[in-house]
Image (cartoon, rainbow, N blue to C red):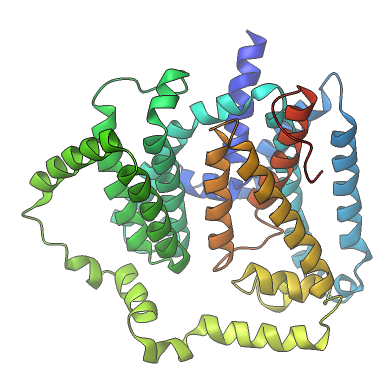
Length: 400
């Protein structure tokens, strides 16, 4: 009984903790007065408690834990922070402690003993959660529940998970990694894709729009490679077309989100005056002043009110070219490991899609220190590989 509770609790934490801000923000649809700080701290405490009560730790888990502690000390050793607003710094530091740090601990737990199966099984309930909350927010007055940009990315998280479950539906059913086994669920999945796309477009997030194109392209390529899949897709698409054929979709361009996307991608003369590009220019000027070691970890948060809307610029500004090289090396190594692991474990493909989602998202919005997803994915990849090697699976001893 306790093992089953642990199995499900770990999967839920793995979905909610790395980006607990998105999960709690989406809960505002049902609980408008929910506190981000209290709910986020509660999730963090639960994850830390589970990690501490583990019976044993591997050497690499201890090593990663020490690295996290060292990184936290770097915050205090950066002279930049001692001349800034203390309250603002504490708020940002707390964000790092309640999202990335617990996400790292959960990643280590998830990677062991093939708990990835529970993560896959809970993907569809989480997809339905983000689909429902983003759709309700999209139908509400703009920014009344969820900020427009966040709305787009939450919908894209649901879209990404849905694409994965459509592509690997046969394997998911074969290994019983779903709670939805009725025949109509396949049709419902495709219908949900339309709802998720609508929600993403209504928010007007630029990165979300690019992700919509990428994930749709991946789905169409996989469909074209499988004739059985192709006929099924055409049938479902035809049924949906019959339902919506009389609807007028030109109003999508007149929505705030549609107009925002059109202004940026469809009207080149407006791009040069876009506020986002002006921020890029300001950050780049600051980077050139300290190109090698940067201004200090987290300094972008204070100087540019959170982040520069591009993860590469954030890293260059905070840690210089030296720090950027280290971080990008970790990302590249993780990508190579995941690509090789997918040959022996199809479930790893979900993490590849997640990597893609997070990188595109953070190329337009978000802070690498306040968002725990990149930390979660890098640590999970490393630990899952080590666990596979330890279990003597068919994995060559590469890179690590």
